[in-house]
Length: 317
Image 1 (cartoon, rainbow, N blue to C red):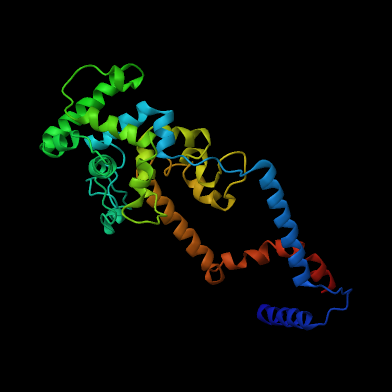
Image 2: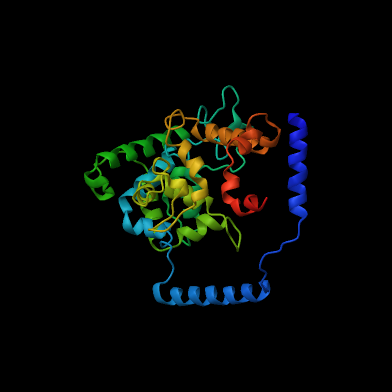
């Protein structure tokens, strides 16, 4: 009997769907409306742009960083030379640092791709850019001619000295055996302040460039750039994935991704990114399979919200 009633109900629904519309009709020129809408929106955009300018925050560059926070820039450059920065210890795809990867149980997903974008922070962020100067500093030869152990000792000692200096000011660092590190970081600071470091770090030998990976990693290793993100509520613990710079609406469709980073076990897990992606994959699969899952596929019949939305249709029915 239940099957028969369902078939009768389905038949009535199909019959209703085939019935001609007998209500009021109006002519509708979609092309005309689209043209008018585009013209109005275009004029509004041009007018507001001329009056208030772009709503976006000015881009952060290595030059602006070196100018606004020179002490942080020098400390970050020293950490790149010492191999103690976040990028140096990130693991794949930038390097092969051990125990730096995120795992899903026993599966090391991050290592599956390997170091596809190899980055040697000391060479790529400091030495190689300085070597492009018309008159490269002599300290490069001292650095490249030293052993790995000596380089590490110099850079680590200078990094520790900067931490202890008043206001982390390089000019107030206590005397010590820092080798060529102060000269290298000072030369890199001068290069960045002149605006010469940005194009060198980003171009990688190409005339056109849309890959800012190197400069963003270098910026992220310091304290200046993350502090700006924190002030704009763009960090992970501030729902940053769905926020926008300034007081403007952000990417609201990323609310579920952002939510995962605010709750346990994701919030404190060292594998948070992998867990979040895996969770979203499972939820997406469940959503895709709703028509095939008993119980879930019956929810619209048990909770007929659609009947409220399309109440005119069901009233005529």
